Amino acid sequence: MLSRLACGVEQVQTVKSLVKEMDMSVEEMREKSRAGAGLLKFVQAVTGYCDVFKEVKPKREKVSHSVALFAA
Image (cartoon, rainbow, N blue to C red):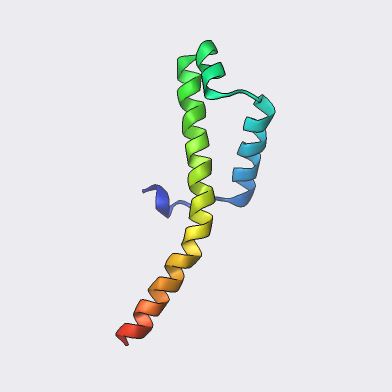
């Protein structure tokens, strides 16, 4: 399950900088390679997931802690 994987800050930054360096949209990539376009779209989705995960994880932990306190 992807949510169990750690989204390393360094890894995400490296991938984002490489994608930015390419300076290519999914549509431009599709003109060159359909497989490449699919891969680029996937990479963008995963880096977006990691951004959201970074914000949601502490909130989930806070809710879990609150639930545990309420149940005790």
